[in-house]
Image (cartoon, rainbow, N blue to C red; front, side):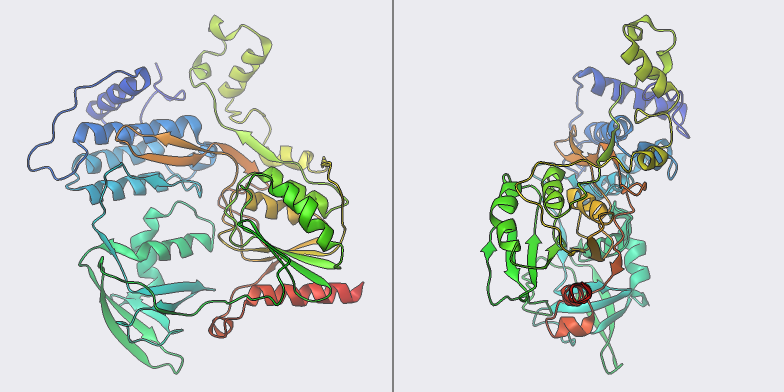
Length: 493
C-alpha cells in the first residue's frame, strides 16, 4: 500500500530507514502521541532526536501533498532521496544552530520564493554579522555601507573572499539557504545570507578601489554593534507630495508625469483609495509611473483594480492551479466504491491517476495560452488611458509578480527595471512538531503569456540596473530611465 501520493517506494532509502519513516509519518497523520526520549546530558540541541526526525518527516510529507509546484520540482530533484540524505544529518546535529541551518537548507530545496523557515520558539542564534553592507549590481559586488572600523572606500568592488573569487565563494557556501532560483533575486538573497555566520568566524576580503588599487582586510562575524554609519543610497525627493500613506506615495515628476509608488497590495481598502483619491489627481497628467520595486505582494485583486483603472482593454485573467488533493484517491480511483459516489469526484480521482495534478489533462501552458484572450472587466468609477511605466525589481513578489506579468501584456503599459522575484499565488503556513513552521506555495501560477511565474518572474520590457555612479550621486537610475522613456512616448503623441 502506498504511503503518500501513490508512491510505492521511498527512493534510495534502506528498509530499516523506510520503516522509521513510515512509523513517524503514520504517527503524524493519525495524531498519535509518542513517548519523547529526554535529551542526553551531552546533547546540546534543544530539540531531541525523535522530535527532529518527526519535524523533518512533516516537511517531507506536507510538501508532497500541498506544494503547488510539485510536478516541476520532481523534475529537478528526487525529494525522497533528499529526505534520505538529510535524515542522518538531522539525527546527528550537535546544537540548535546546526539543526536550524539543516532545516533551512532542506526547505530551501523546494526552490520556492514563498518558502521561509521560522525556527522554534526559544531558539537563540549563535550567529554574528559583519560591519559592512554589500550590493550586487549587474554582475559585480560593491561595498556600499560600513561602520567606522572598516577603512575601505565606499564603492569599492569586492574581488575575493578567502582568496577565492567573491561571487563564487558566496554562492558556493550560502546559496543552499536560498529557495528562489530567479535571477537576480537568487544572487542578491545569497549575498544577504553571507552577512550572517558563526560568531568568531574570520574572513579575508579583498577590494578594488576606483583607482584600481587593491586592499585586503580581515573581518570577524560578531554580535557587537555593527550598525552601518556610512553608506551609499538613493535619495528620492519630491518638491510636492500629493498623497502619502503606508501604501502609497504620490508626487508629480513634472507637468506631464505623475509618480505613484505602491509598496504593498495587502492594505485593506487600498483599491478604493486608488480609484477615489489618487485617480482623480491623475486626470491632470498625461502619463504615470507605477513603482512596485519594494512591493512584496498581498491581494492580487487590488492590483487588478489599478490595472483596470488605467486600461481600456480590461484585465488579463488569473491562471492559478490549486495543488491540494486527496492522495488516497490516486491508486483507488477505478475500483474503490468510496470514490464512485458522483461523477465529479470520480472525474477528479481519474485525473489524479493520469497525473493531471492541477485539474486539467492538457499541458498547463497550452491551456493558459488557449484562454489568454479571455480578459475580464472590473467595475471601477473611472478609466484613464495613458502611457504607463511600471518599475520592477527582484523584490517585486507574489501579487506584485502577477501585477507585473499582467502589465506586460497591456498595450499602454511598459515594464522597466529588473526581473521580478518569481513566486506568486496563495501560500500556506505549515506548523511543525518542534514548534517551528515553514511556508510554501500551494498554487501553480501562470502569466498571461503562458509561462510559469515560479522561478521565472516577469521579465521587464526594458531591463535597467542601478549604476554605481548614480548610487554615488544618490540618483535613481531606474526612475530616471523611466522618466526619459515616458517623456519620449508623450512627445511622439
